[in-house]
Amino acid sequence: MGRIRDAVVMGARTVRRIPIPSALSHQALREARRPNPPSAVLKRHAVEVEMIGRTRCVWLDGHLARQEPVIVHLNGGAYVSGPFASDWAWLSRQADARGCAALMIDYRTAPDHQHPVALDDTESALAALVADGRLADLPWVLSGAHAGGGLAFSVARRLRDRGDIPAPSALITMSPWLDLELSNAGITETGQVDPVQERRMLREAARVYAGRTPLDDPDLSPINASLKGLPPVHLSVGLRDLFLADVRVARLQLEEHGLDLSYREISGRLGMQLIPRRGEDIERLHREQADLIERVLSRP
Image (cartoon, rainbow, N blue to C red; front, side, top):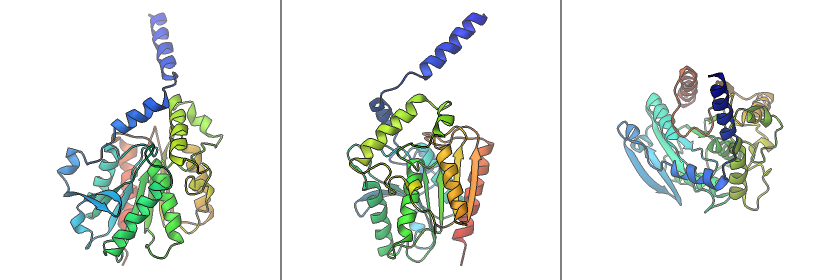
């Protein structure tokens, strides 16, 4: 019996380490894409698809946007896919908790589109919302997961230096992809427990999305930019996430600049979640995020 068990364990470990071609991983991610909310979200919110500028966006309770603040979310998906069910579940929960409108910006992705399309789509949508009065007079929150988390940092940094779009009142990022080079040596620590193919897939996704732009460009890899002057930040990561080392570096940078920072590491994985994760750690994380949203959106 012991030999059979050992053989099964060895076989499972071997299969886990077999590299999956990046093209196959990207195809699986694209097939997991949920451009519209799942039924559980449809039952709780008035859902409306709107082209804002050139960008496809989806509102949850968009009719509240002129009376209540807005949560703007940027989905994960390694710049090749998304949003996923997990993005919709998070956004629905936080909109319910605050009783406000929420917006998913469905920015375009690779391989059909390359950098800076995600930045351009996001900023053009925000500019259009300001122009028509839905984002000009009330505070708002910018959130993002995985690739969307890194994108949220880049957008917040750029808005810091612009005057035509008000900066978000808070930034909430979950396991953000902050370095498209994947250059931090600390990645090997979590790489031992992450699927081997994840790093391969991410390297190919970065290459396809970046195009001719160097991967260390601050607009692609905000870990290389100054994070000074950002709004209050809630930053979270899983202890088994590939980005753990980079997120810890970002935490130190934010603390050095004296920013209003809430930080949470949770067990297991938080990044690249295609379906909503449950558990005590997740519940605590969601409550902390909701507390920050309520605090900044309730300011006079």
